[in-house]
Amino acid sequence: MKKLEFLLPAGNLEKLKYAFAYWADAVYAGVPMFSLRARENQFSWETLEEWVKYAHERWKKIYFTANIYAHNFKIKPFMEAFKKMEELKPDAYIMSDPGLIYLVRKQFPTAEVHLSVQANNTNWAQVKFWQEIGIKRVILSREISLREITEIHRECPEMELEFFVHGAICMAYSGRCLLSNYMAWRDPNQWTCAHSCRWEYKVYKNEVTNEDLYDSTGRPTNYLPIEGEYYLEEKERKWDFLPVDEDEFGTYIMNSRDLCLIDYIKELKEAGIISFKVEWRSKTINYLAWVWRAYRKAINAVEAGKEYDAKELSKELFAISNRWYIPGFITWDLKEKSIYYDKNSELKEEDFVWIIRDYDSTKKMALIQVKNRIDLWQTLRLVSPILDYEFKLEKIIDPAWELKTEAHGWSFDVRINLDQNPGEYAILRRRI
Ligand code: SF4
Image 1 (cartoon, rainbow, N blue to C red):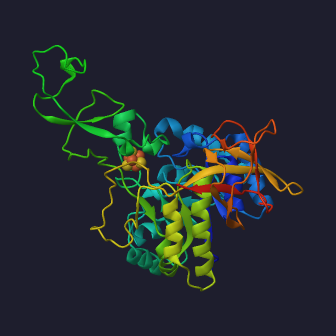
Image 2 (image 1 turned 180 degrees about the horizontal axis):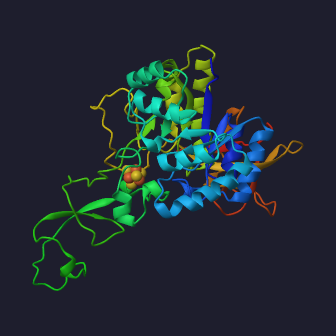
Image 3 (image 1 turned 60 degrees about the horizontal axis):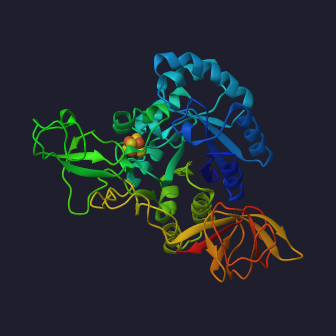
């Protein structure tokens, strides 16, 4: 029986360190130019080398994401880059383009390849096919049910199966969407999705006649669509019109709710999933640490054959910013509302306050990097990979050693009272 794997994103070097501190077994990191989220990470060849070393020194794994669908002109540079990647010795590559996989399998037969979620694996026949090609692991499509995962595992018991359990999801078939191409000239399948589905859209009514040169907002009327009709217009992109309706509250009509499968870890394990993956390389350390703690607890419990309190862990996940959660497709409950019409990522109960940089155990004071404003006598929550407790803020001291009644975000580092040594990777939160 294979050990379960907890797989986390590493969008930059700091997040990679935090991922391992918060008990990741493995991380995935986008390779410059060849991964779908390359814009959201800070890796270069030099840093990739350093971080492979960092992971391996801790007996952890690191996977390189190289999952673009390449056009002809990218094949040669990809294969040249792959040679460089092989020298860095990652544990596996996450890929999706069948052509590139074919070339990699031919030229680098010992390289371990995991099939990316971008390849949209939805049935056991596809998995069998990839098994024959030499793929070691398949990251199943988000758009399948628990029953289908069970069937796939039954038909292909040798194949390692990975599944996304938490994170943002597309309103389209994962990544197969032209919205971002259309709105921002940024292709989701070429590493550059602009998340156009999250933008704020308003309905605009064309009330001018085409004989007018300009409308009341100063737009030239030759840009306007049909007189008297309603059109969708994105806040930042005036004059791009899409026909649509809205109610009195406006609408974020394409803004999918977020995926959360904290309730289903046991079922997913029983269905055959061995790697539980979290999306969101672009989120803050606070956010990621919070999600990671919750899922690690659930995975540990399931691995040990114990029950876990999914309700309690869900509460923790609702404390951080989210678009409300849905279980994606695994229950096939299509009645479940999947679009969050009101807002984009505004729900949260707790706020990220500070990162702890240093601790003086003699004075019992911590040096803090301020992220959001905090006031004296406020109750804060300290969370680290091993600690979780609340305390009152009794002292704030600025760099000139003056006592303060408040500290503002991103201004300067301050010292605060803290009875217990928080250790490494601790963060502070406050209730909103
Ligand atoms: S615009 Fe939205 S739906 Fe389209 S690929 Fe990007 S995140 Fe997915």
